[in-house]
Each structure stands twice: as C-alpha cells, then as structure tokens.
Image (tube, rainbow, N blue to C red; front, side):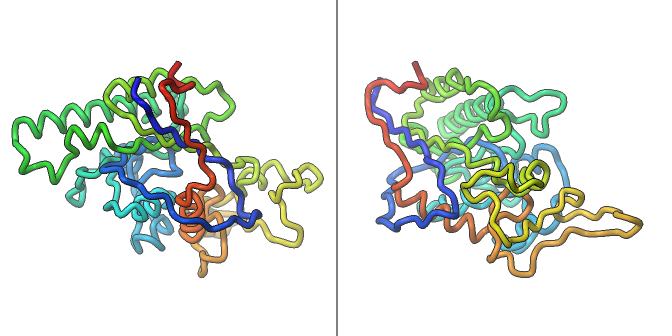
Length: 297
C-alpha cells in the first residue's frame, strides 16, 4: 500500500487551558466528510424532508438551517474552502468541486434499524460517496473539463482529505467499520482524518437525566459547583410544548456566546470556533505514517 495519513483526534474539554500553536498547513484539494450531527450541514433535513425551525442556524446563517453543529463549517472555512454542501441538498446551486459532505444527524456506524433517527448510517454514506465519485468522473468524461468547476476531478478524489466524525450514537457497540474504510481506500482515498468522540457523560442532556445526584458525577468538570445547567429535557429547543396547562416555547438564548452547548448535545458557534481553532493547530492529533494501517488490517 502507499503511505497514508491518519489523524485521530484526542479528546479535549473546555475546562483545560489549551496552548496556541501555528496552524496546520492543509494542502488538500478537496474534503469528503462522513459522520453524524456533529458535522451535518443539511443532509438529514434534505434526505428526510423535515422543516427546520429556529434557533437552528440563527447565528452562523442568520436563518433556519439543517446544520446542527458548525465546527466542520468553521474548520473547512479555515482551510480556505467554500461551504461543504450536503450530498442530498439540491437547493441553492450546490458546488461539489472541492468536496462533499455525507454526514447526517443521528447516523451510526452500525446499520440503521426501524427505530433509528437516521437511515443514512456509515455504510450508506460510503455507498453514497462511491456513487458520487462514479457519477462525477462519468460526467467529466462525457462533458469535458469545462465542468470541472462543479465536481471533483479524479486527482481531487485521490489527493483529497477524508474526514470521519461518527460513533457517538452507537458508542457502546463494537467499532467494525474497517470494511467500509477499506472500500474508500480501494476507491483511491489515501488521506484519512478520523475524529474520536467527546466525553458523552458530560453532555447537559445526559447530566440532566442521569446526574441529578452530584455525588454520582465525576471530577472532570461535568458538574460545576454554583453553576446552572440550564437544560430542560421536557422542552426541545425551538419547539413549543404544553406544561401544566401553559404553552412553553424553548427559545434560543439572548447571548449564546456565553454558553457552550445550545440543545443539550451540540456546541454553539462560539464553542465550535474555539474547538476548531485548537484542532487546526495539530497539537491534539496523532499522525501515523507507514505502509499499513491497523484499522485496515
């Protein structure tokens, strides 16, 4: 096999003061992203056809958006790439010259079941990519180079960066995505950037449900003394619900920049900006170079 780059993120938390270093120089011509809601830019909303309501997108897009988390948008923007369009979102004249985003909220590594939020698990996303690649190359072959401003050329697929941020929704099961990673490798992918999951036990929605007794929480900052959790599992963000005879609407905070998480699970824009700026320094990544990769064996 050719030499490949694999980047595996190390978990970082907001309670740690992180050092600032020089940014990583990304020389990739395209980005192909696979994942769940942590990097979805509109895939699930387009695929399932559901209506997006505020406060989704109120800060970054200033209008309702299918994106639930903006760290990917910020990271790609820092690489000087245009917005990474969702594979199934056909509105707004999407341009896929510099890559495509296959991530869909609620997706899992394991195949979707009847109770899954998303039907677009990792396996489906890989098959979507393979179809996208085949159709793009066929389109260029038939139409000529004048259309390479709309879809990636073959060398873009070979030299592009393949990003993965998935597993949070099925963390408690065995990670066996080797087969589908190998299918991407066999298609020509060589540069892999694989994200790990964050401290799920510290998410507000988890703490609100299982951490009502502070003595049961750990010492890593999941519960801050004197701080208000500010999360109510009875009312989903952006939706109205009748509680004790009164209609209550869960609205966005007036100043979201002072918070870390907005819906119990996903970071707000300011937090994503901070995380992305730290990730892009390269200080929290392990780069493995060699003829063979453990996850492809």
